[in-house]
Every structure is written in structure tokens, then in C-alpha cells.
Image (cartoon, rainbow, N blue to C red; front, side, top):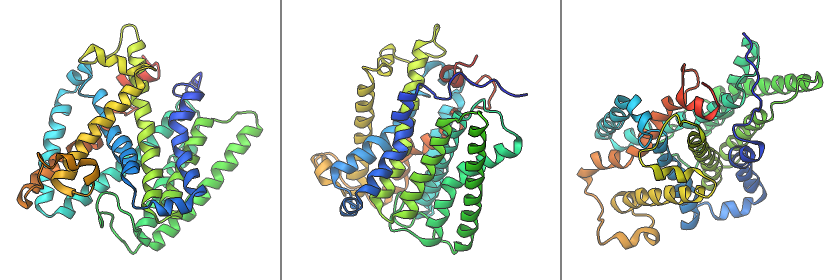
Length: 368
């Protein structure tokens, strides 16, 4: 049965979505392409830039998950076992992996993160194409295309190698797979041409263009292609990768919280009523500052106990935090990585659209 098309393809509005969902895919790429010398010069990332990209956006968006899960009283009660056991089992698995070697742990975490990043691009794409009629063949082609927009650059990374890494040097495998990257690239190109031809034909027939979907698809291809394939530069990769992932996620969490509080009666409620103030236009900045503070505290523990590579940002904590003994790392590293690990695991569940009666879709998309 053909679904009725939604009144708007945008999640909030053209202005909101373009600013906070779509622009993060394009603006970092345009800056990288316009300022290649500056990007090369700042490749080692000064502290202020690292604070913005990693602490503010990357780590900050991880912590924002708590508003969809642990701080949502009714959501937590509905899935108590999931939210209690995920960090417990995640920590145990992390300790087990680290006991086989640090690289075993970091490589497993890196590929879980990669899966999470790839799935987010697919998830937003499916949100933007919701209710759009298509034959099963066209739908398969579009799903394959959004996946290839991320998987082809990753295959190039694996086959050609890159000077950057995901978490630690060597966490992304180097494979003799140039033939696979080449074949995948050909398939990617063919599907992209078919998609453009089909979209142009639809537009000429008066069917209109689903602009959010098209912009998300093109922006994903651009950010992943430029960040991984066109540049072999840590800053180029981090800026295009982190901003295109973290900012839309933060915007989605804020939009969910905003619409949750506007429902009468609300579908869910936060554990503390004052948290609702974060999901107003005036409270958005406070939410960002809160995420930055939580990210700073997490990275302070990482830096003083493990890495020790940002003394200007965290050196004042030397009086209280000393480098951990080697024997402690087997449980300390998985413990410090637990917010990220929990975020990756829960995100594979909490945003699913195809689950009947999905509460978050009732809030965000007005479903009942």
C-alpha cells in the first residue's frame, strides 16, 4: 500500500534542518577545499581546535544520548533491562578485549564506531525519504547508494592506507583490497548516475524533488569522499567526519526534546522537570555548554590518566590525577570508553523506525 506523503519532508523546518542537519555536511568540506594550506598547517590540531571538534562536538554528542535514555523516566522504565545491562556487559566485554591486547580493544571499538557512523547516515536518509513511494527495486538502489557513499571511502582507506586513524594509530586495518575498492567505486558511480537520471526524470514529469533526501545523500557523499579520499590529512578527516555526524545528532536530540515537551500530554518526562528548559530556543546554548562540560571532564580523565598529550588544557589537574599504572589499564580504559561504547550500542536500538508504536517517532514525526 502506498503511504501518504508527509506534509513536509523536513524534520523541523527548512531553516532548522538546513542549518543544523544539512549544513554540517557541506560547510566543513567547503572550508577544507577553500583553505587547503591552512588545513595542512593545522593538521596536528592546536588545543583550541581539538577542544571544539573533539571535546565539544564528538564527545559532547555522545553524552546527549542520556536525554533519550537514562534521563527519560518513562523510556528508562519501559526498557530498564536494556539500559541497565548494556553498560555492564559493554564494560565486561571491553575488559575482556583489552586483556588480549590494547590494539584488540581499540580496533574493536573503532569498527563499532565506524558501523555507528555509517548507520547514522543511513538513518537520517531514511527519515528524509519517509512516506515516499518507490518500487522495491528503486528502494534497494537508494539504500545501496547511501551505504556506498560511506563504504566506498572506507574501502579506499583500507586498501590505500591513510596517515590518520580513528582512535589510535593502526586501529583501521590495511588490506590488499584495491580491486574491491575499484569494483565498489564502479558500482557506486553507476548507481549515482541512475539516481540522478531518475530524479531528473521525476522532476521533469512534475513529481517534484525531495530536497532534504537529495541534500543528505549528496552531502554524505561529499563529506566522506573529501574527508577520506581526496585528503590524507587528520584535520580534514576529523572536521568533515565529526561535524557532519555530531551536529545533526545533537540537533535531533534537541528537536526530540523540544517536541516532547510541546505534546499535551507529553509522551515521556525527564527525571527532573527543569531539564525541559534545555529544549527551548533560549536553553539550546545551555545544553551545548553542558555537553561541552561533560566532554571536558571525560577528556580530562583520559588525558591525565592515560594519554598525557594536552598539558595546556588539563595540566592543572596534575595534583589530583596521576598516570595510571600499566596494570590498571585493562579495566580503566574500558571504563573511560564506556560512555562511547554505550552510545554506540544503544543507538543501534533507540532510533529504529520500523518498530511498531515507536515512542520517539510519535514525538518527532507526530505518529500515534
